[in-house]
Image (tube, rainbow, N blue to C red; front, top):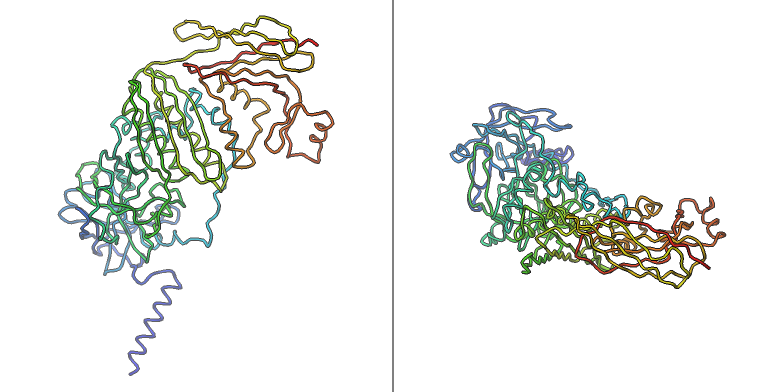
Length: 603
C-alpha cells in the first residue's frame, strides 16, 4: 500500500523540481544530449499534413552566440534526401524519447546532406517570459521640417534607413557563406507585385533573412478552417493583405495553451510587435542546390505574433492584430486611374518599409522604370482624435523617380511612428500619385523688382525668372503689397517650399520640437510644397519660440524676461520676424532655389 504513495511523492518531487529549475518535464535536457542519439522531427511537406523525419545528434556547439548553444544534427528521410534543409522548415520540432529537444533553425548553404543547426527549446521559451507590463516605446522627437530636409526628398542621396527600405542601395558586399552555418531563410510570398518591384527589393529582403517568392500570397488556404495549429504545422506571418499580399512562412515548434512558439531563429528581431498570424498550406517544396524552398498559401488570421526575438517568434491564438487600411490611387501618364486597397501591419520599422514597397510596386506596375518622369505624391493619414495629416511632394528625375516618390509617401508615416507620442492611432492611409512621362523641372534663376523704395500699402511688382533644364527661361509676374511696417529695410524672399524649409532648418527655426501630437500634426500640415513658389516678407529682428510656437516681434521687455535665467530651457531665441508669407498656386514644375531682394520702406 505504501509503494503507490511513494511513487506519487517522487512524481510530485520531480514535477516541482522541474518548475523550480525552469525545465519542463516534456523538454529533453540539453546537457543529456550525446553524439549518436537518434530521434524524430515533424514538419509539413505537402498541404497541411504533418510528417515525420529522422535525425541523429552530431554534437552540441557551445557559445555560437552570447550564452547561446546550438545542436548539430543530420536529418534524413526520402523527401529530405531530395531537398535538404529547406526555407520554411525553420521551427520544425525534433524529439528524443517523445521529449522536445528544439527547433530546426540553421543550415549550411550548398550542403549535400541535410545537416541542420537546432535551437534548444528551453531558450526559445525562456526568452519570451514577459514582464508584468510592457515598457513604453521611447523615441527621440524630431523637428517636422526634417521630413523635407531629408536627402531622400531633396534628391541629393538616400540615408541608410531609406536605402534599406527602398531596396536601391549600392550593391551589398559579397559575403562568403559556403561552409558557414546560416539562419534558414524565411520564404516571403508576394501576391500582386510586379517583377520590377520585387527585383529592386530583393537584395534588402535577403539581407533581412527573407527569400521573396512571387505570386503565391493571398487567402488561398480556406480548407484549413478545422485544422489545428500544432507542433510541426506551417504558420504564416501576414505583413500585407488585400490587393497586395505579403506573408512569411515557417514552422510551429511548440504550443502551450494559447501560446505558440515558432521559427527557432529571429524573424526580423523587432522585439515586441503585433503581426497577424495565420495558418498556411504547402503547395510544394522546390528543390535547389543552394536553398530549397517551401511554397505556401495563407488562410485567414487565427492569432497575433506578439514578440520576435533571437530564438524565434511567440504568438497568441485567439487574439488579433490591428492593421492599417491603405488605399493607393494612381493616375497614370495615360490619364487612367488605378486603385489598390490593402492593409499593412502597424509597426515602427515594418510599416514604413511596407508602405515604400507597396507604393513603389503600384507605380512601376503601370509607369516606366527607365527614363525621365514626374510624380506628384499626396499622403493623407487619418489619426484618431486629430485632424487629417496631409503631406505633399513632387519628384522629377531621370532615373529613380518612382523610388523617391515611394519614399516620399512613406516619410510622414515613418516620422509619425517614431515621433515618441504614445497616443498615436492610425485609422487609415490614403496615397495619391499622379504620373507624367517626362521631367518637369525649373530653377529660380533671378528676381527683378520694379522699385527699390515703397511706402506701406504700395505695390512692388516682382518678375521671377525660371530656367528649365533645356535652357528655356520662363517669366512669372507677381505684385506684392508692402505691409504696414515701420521704415527701414524689408527683405523679400522668393523660393520653392522645400528650399525655404531647409533654410529654416539651418537657421534658428531648427530648434522647433513639437510638444504634443496635435502640434506635430499642425507642423506637418504646414510644411511647404516644392511645386509652387512662396514669397516671404521679413526683417532680421529678435523674437522667441515658446513651447514650440514662434512669437516674433516681441516687445523688448518681454523678450528680456523670456531670455532670463528663470526661463532657461523653455524659450529659444529667433532672429527673424516674418510679416507676410504668400503661397502661390501650384505650377507644373518641380521647383528649386531661392532668391532674396530688399526694399526700403519709407515713412
